[in-house]
Image (cartoon, rainbow over all chains, first blue to last red; front, side, top):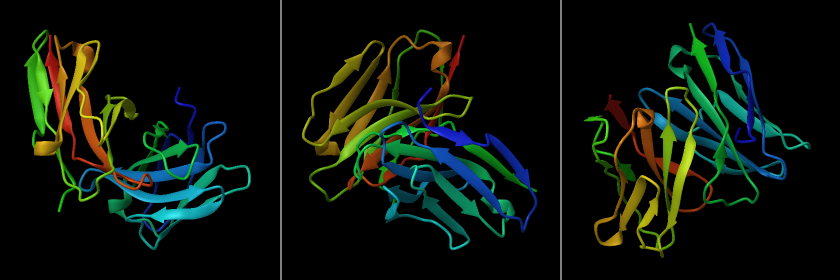
Length: 113
Length: 113
């Protein structure tokens, strides 16, 4: 158990819908990172939050948004879902705003049908 | 351009054989970190090793060893006496800023009993 908790583990939804993925970081970690792993794009960095503030942004679509709450858990919101959004979404956490070896959660597998 | 290249898409070896997974990276930064992660069939990402750019010492951990060569921008991973449990996808990753990782496309290793 990495200490990073992601829910749900699996999600199946229809095109056009909106879903929310949740991540609870390890105790004491202030940063949360989101990654998408898809068959065609591989593992790609989406966004990082540190202590409630957006810290770094990667290849995140405008249809996607994230936030980090005062209790440090984070949510990734995916809207107007397309078939191509089907992927494994990982969350990771670290203590500081820069970290060189963060711990990943077990992922949420999203299937858009 | 890819920052991390794993040219070997799939490798199959017979149990007890040694196998080397190649990783070539590209960066202009003098300070950076390299990683290897394992993704077993269950899907989670398991941290294996971190190496910073100032430490070219090779590392051995049990059956695993890593060869970091800045001159060739490579960070190769060798599994000695492979076992069936080593079957997984292995990812090499680069971090320059500490905010995001650039992952290679992964090498799928199958160890045949």
